[in-house]
Image (cartoon, rainbow, N blue to C red; front, top):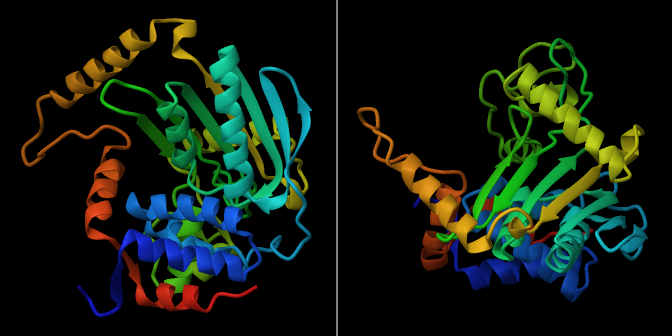
Length: 328
């Protein structure tokens, strides 16, 4: 292992994270919920969304603004809109996901939104919760503007992930994609670690291509796949308006869940088995030379989680040291 990397057991990583969260003002339950989220991201192989993400919290422009209890603004049997109380999204959106699961399990369908929150975390985490409850979930996360439209040289949209989760008889199937060419959390991580960006994912404040994370943060990321990614990003941002976001830069985060029972349309067990058979059919596709396996969405992350649960979590020593001294 390189000298700048260290390996932690899951218990050690959890203790490090929870202590860091307590030092920046979160209570024990809040620290546990956020720690669960970032530990799972680390286990799944997303280092920038893992323990390092905790360093972003006290640096966020909204961190020092007053926090209030998460509360319901409006609600029906199948819907709810939550005021996140300026809490970090990994708390507020988790609460909304729980509500969406409970409503859909009882009534067959739910639509739940969250406004007045920030830093959503990894969307796959929430839709996997939904799939594990034998429900189908769609989650959109309209976020602060950092992505330029095609032809533009200033940010107009967020990285705006969209995620899907569904059950199968071989376990949950999860697909989570950002609509930007590079994820904002990874951009912050690259800047923190002094690493360059890939080619073709960002522009500086003059609209010129850059690989420098600091220049990209002053400029903009580009959409994934040109107009197709831009179109998805626009729709996710617009759906955020339903969830209570606004066009004001300080209020442009809006998160939405659409959750429903498969057995509204089909027998649950039949559906889960059919999804399994679809996966098996796809994985049996004849492969090109040198291709060992065809993977389905989420499969790499699940395997990484299984391995890391046995072997522990690797993080950069700089991140480890920074978490050990993190303060508000």
